[in-house]
Image 1 (cartoon, helix red, strand yellow):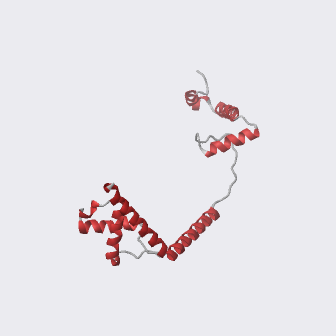
Image 2 (cartoon, helix red, strand yellow):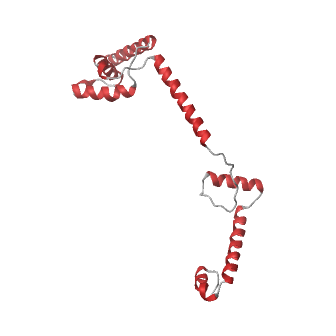
Image 3 (cartoon, one colour):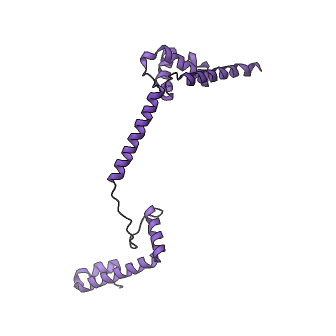
Length: 177
């Protein structure tokens, strides 16, 4: 019981302090300031002697160190100032979102069954959805397009003189040897 009573007593004391601080709006530095520059200054001044306490008790040590050296650190904001800061930040976010929305060029998604998108991308998803709605089989459409392309290439190559591109056409597989 004796081992637990000390930590319980510290915990109860800290809870009472927190209740009083919140009731009377006592300014306390934020977590980043407390564990940033205040902690670093305390360690540089006292070394590791003060680290025998842990958790909330050590945080209380940091707060008491901050109170003794308030002039070194920025003044914490009051409740009203924090609310004003939150409102300003919210307004800034809304304005930024509105600015970005106004800059966007709204172009509807253009369905192109011949275009091949990266697997798993949102473009591929929209393409498959649109093809399903239109009743188009993308694989057969792409196969037919490839065959039409090959026929067009055959026609272009067939019109050229044999001695100029016969070797190139054979290499590409247009003519079987």
